[in-house]
Length: 179
Ligand SMILES: [Zn+2]
Image (cartoon, rainbow, N blue to C red):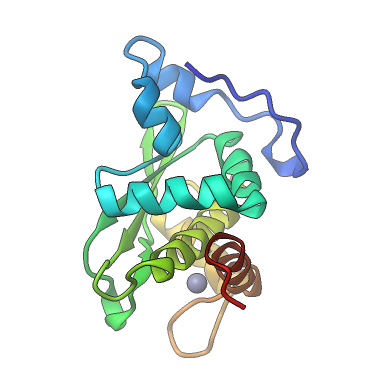
């Protein structure tokens, strides 16, 4: 099983309890599934898994993002589904707590984001997940909502951050060669 000892570029990630070790210390994930996503970012969806595998292979920026997430106490499940307000992908505004871990959920709609659009959407939403996980005080849905109200208000009841827009664009370019 992989133990994340990566040198961290983001100080906020230092000092988190080892979430994945706690949850999977007994029944560790298979090598294959650990390769395709990671212990901390998980999906049952073949479309999502292959988009993540491709981005990990081709995008250094995406690998850094995954390492930063892996060093937190967060577990992120990416599921196929419908987001509110007719968007193709979103971070669900809820936080689950399981032992020392915070659980977040990202929803993607493959019909809205096929191909490299899926890579872009996943990178974008994982950046939002990172934004939440970097703040250790975000432990409830209300806390998550307030965080985005603070860092990403759009004035129309939705949230957005420049970092997420940038992350999606950079990872899509590095993975798919889009400008
Ligand atoms: Zn966003």
